[in-house]
Image (cartoon, rainbow, N blue to C red):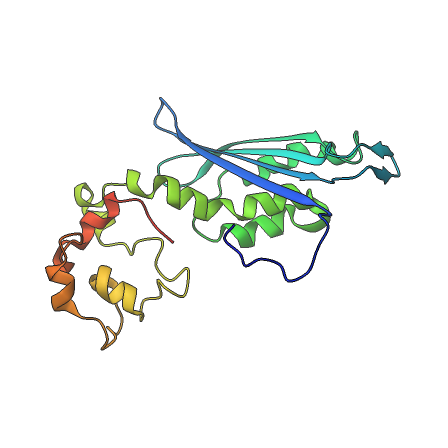
Length: 214
């Protein structure tokens, strides 16, 4: 396992699993299918009845269909398993409010305004919040910035979204020099150019054809 060995014996109480798949459709649209499940290793007494061990307390699905500008054009939500059947699942149609939003421009803020808190399902909304980075990971390489002069003038969407890819940091200075605001002194440009695995700085737009990593 990737974490250190626990220093004390412990008992499993809960498992949440999130799975996301991204697809390119034949009609050139993109789709993201997201699924979250919550399970317990023991029987759970709910106000609505007993839930056997291992049966999902939640099994929630969300599909977003995107155009090539990361704008949501279709939404499907499905509450496959919920603790209060006939109540929890009635919120599914409200996720149509996401249609028209950009997944990469202010999405989380508008998401909370439209279906945050009691306006939506806590877990479906949480699931939606993690989809922007999944979309960029999946589809960033689908955008050919070299063949689009306007796109070449736009800052790559992954920049300034985490500490490693901040505009005044070493990574941007080394791999995206066009967008560096103040290249750090520790960046060794000569060693960068000598590396057989990296593009030279003046060819930065070619990086857009690689999978976006952040």
